[in-house]
Length: 142
Image (tube, rainbow, N blue to C red; front, side):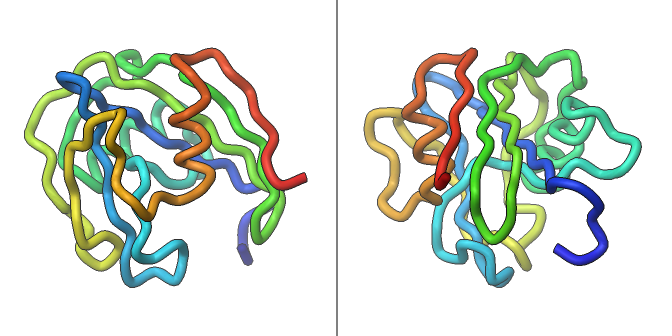
């Protein structure tokens, strides 16, 4: 990614209610288009991991939460188009109803049962969701 110094750092937010996980289907970006992912994005200069996660969640879904309402879930160091680090956080609570707020980046949103996730998941997101209940660290693609 041109213009980003160091290793790109991503954040992903796990919102779960009544055993269902909020997922978005990517579209129109050239990055895993047609595959489902957790809400998330890149940490910007001057942001903490939690601040970036709260911002990305609101930008993509309209759900609002305070950074302190996010718990650490896991971290993944992965090899993709470049060397990347992704932080996964679990939302304890939020306000609002989820809706597609970036139709130029995602074309579907839904709540899916943890034991019945949709076909067509981004592989590293699927690996993260299969990693357990939290506190994990994984390396992928090395």
